[in-house]
Length: 135
Image 1 (spheres, rainbow, N blue to C red):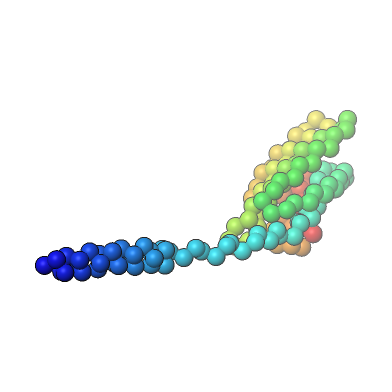
Image 2 (cartoon, rainbow, N blue to C red):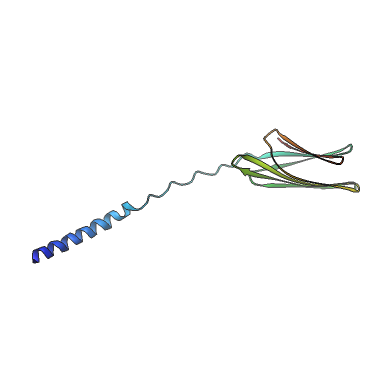
């Protein structure tokens, strides 16, 4: 009986040793590092305001998930334009908000549109035209 107890103790010690040595091998593997984030190329946006015969052109450069603002003012006009790029799985969308004053008249336009490089979006309101062109 003494021999069986000694064998049992040896077996238990050996089993514990094998478990301790193999436990790290049973752990889940470390996942590979995430691929580096590659920034999308900058988008050049041309913003044109046309009221009557007056035409003003502004430009902003946007990166992925960013916004640009134009604020131009004189005695006869004031342009406040905010443009944001929003990346989606299906492509890039552009959100634009225009607030324009020409003498005593104010115009407000807000929209969201999918615009491909080289594409344009036109908005019209009571004698004013707002054009966003992706360059």
